[in-house]
Length: 242
Image (tube, rainbow, N blue to C red; front, side):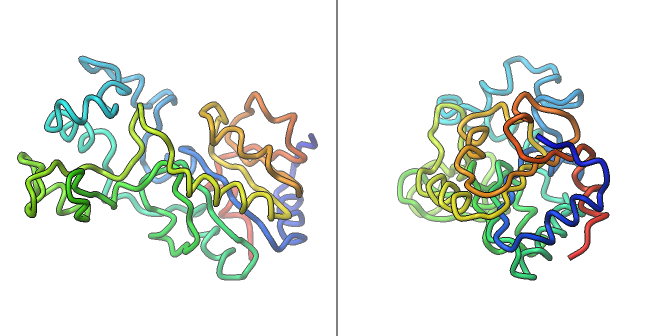
């Protein structure tokens, strides 16, 4: 692994590739004011009656949907968040036909809000909600407005956010598309992630081209990348040009 010291080296690496895929984690959205789970100001460091994983589990949602919603709205939903320089740069890179896909572990929809079109959401999106009984789709606003009943107006079934809760599997079709995108990339950029949560933390192993880690801090898997550049990812992307 070679550590890149200058942003110009990152720029040259990106300029020399035309089939780039970006795999991003919570660090991409923290710079838009959305807290992560494991950071010093993260959700896991707050005091709740139960651990955050308990509130955000499939069983808790099914058994206590109102309490689930109250935690979800308070700690997970950030409808006023805006894309940062990283989201914007990736959208511009896609428009320049250099970026094939964005693979994200985030559920906030900020990549799409910035203009990215080919976004693979490994954990779903807060903007997609559905009735668990009849499948009727609901917008985020409709889900929020359904409180406190949180029931489908067509059949009375529970409305569920289309996000992956603890105890649920990742959508296998999205995961397969992510693997295929990485396999066909000539440069995989992994950014804003500690690479601790499987299976996303292992997706880099499918890369056949070059790999670049852009992260605020070092991870336990840096040695497996061809290149690494350390710094806040939004600030890093703000220095890059198309």
